[in-house]
Length: 327
Image: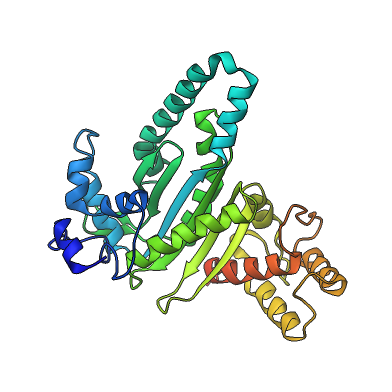
């Protein structure tokens, strides 16, 4: 987008959440443009003037901008068009009423998210945009009472808690469709425009890997990223079933043990690809670190690659909680 176009939009004097609206040569779609625009506090005051959030959202956008780390998330219903076509084919005489019912259910669900997401994230989450089955928001530091100070820093535990709670939140619209979500974890030094571009890519990755999944991407200041894609139902199993080399589990487990073994095996060309040897090594590695837990069967990639992605992401996110030494 040129400087001239930026001027026409009247945004040259606004301060977005962490970066410019777009870069030269970029051509965001209209939905993408809207989602970026509503991250501007001045725009938000107009957009949400009738939502009784005019005094709340600008403060929460400040909290996003002031956070040391932010997790942007974007979700979208899977194959909604096919779902509606099937509904119409099953009962063609009531196609219009079914479409209206679906639209009302999704609209009501989306409108409630502006309050529900902060509630279930203990005020460490904000919905930026919610339209039907389409959702954009962020997890961030807990803002102080005046919206500027930080009362509590965002931790990886808050991210894991959000991922575990979202499937139940999604089901509240009572429509028989699944959802895919992309998430991008960044620190405050990464331009938020770049993070928003990556969260769109992460959502697309979740859909490309089979839908009904989330894609969790860690984005670093140099532009590099790592990503792990997982079915919603697999996350609790993985977190609860993992045992490190010292048989520690939960928040005391050291995910670096798995990451170290994965790196060693990859270096010896024993892990990677979809060959029989690699698959056997991956299954043995799974049995060591996830004892008595069946390996996931519905992956669209070799188990070794999936374990590698899991180990890279979780070893960076989930640091073990050290026990205090008693005096």
